[in-house]
Image 1 (cartoon, rainbow, N blue to C red):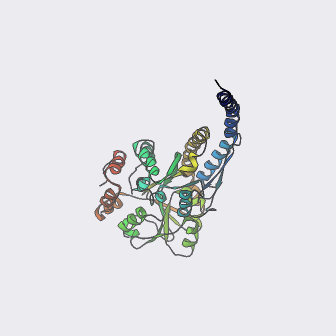
Image 2 (image 1 turned 180 degrees about the vertical axis):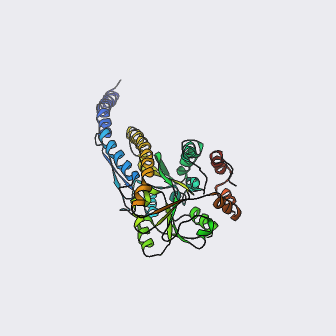
Image 3 (image 1 turned 90 degrees about the horizontal axis):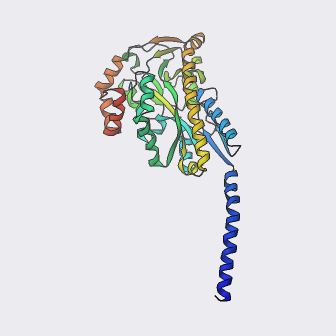
Length: 340
């Protein structure tokens, strides 16, 4: 063996030893790296969903020893639902937490839960969302480079409010200017019921009702309370025409850039807090009628059968069956029963 070969072997040995020495410190550096992320949500911080998100993020920071810090920006501080969803897609914001109806504008399958009168009760809702339908909806985000993180939050069965009259029959909706989220599912439903739907961001809803831009709106009781709609709406009718969820959806590239252990910890804690949120939402919902009555609201129960029959006659269900496609629709009807 000549001197040149000896020198090469020696250099290889030194390099190998250096790499071995550096490996633990490099691993330690990655383990010790700190990550800062943002969640955008348009709901006020008094609502059960932002409360749950903030509690989860505090737990995540504690359990990761400060390696993962996630800040929650409530009340639309970072923009409207559609604005922040766009920012998440670009990676400017890490997460948005909003309704399936909003995601449906980008990922149609994510809003199939919002088909009118699909779910009669919460037992059916959670069977569907924790079962095959929910798995199908979650997987649909992958096509647009987004990822749903954690279980969904309950956003409740939606009820119709009006400034001057109760809604008891479909005739009461004829010509009614009703605020709806910016999505075709809502617009087509209320058009099928002969109302006049108008899209207004949640942050502008109070003013729109106050100035009579719209006559009424529809939301779950916790939202009606959190946004103080009782100050500008007198009647609340129990239509329960749709059930809605909120879910935390992130930029897939930003999420996957986190070390695997941080993703596992975050998902575990978010799951646990979503389950707590569902309990809190239900408990709040059960007390709100009395509270809102104290604020001057009047409530009435509604026979929903005539509303469903009118939607069937209008072609609403057949239209959405075609739009969602046979696979998604079959999964929905597995839980809801025959709709179209």
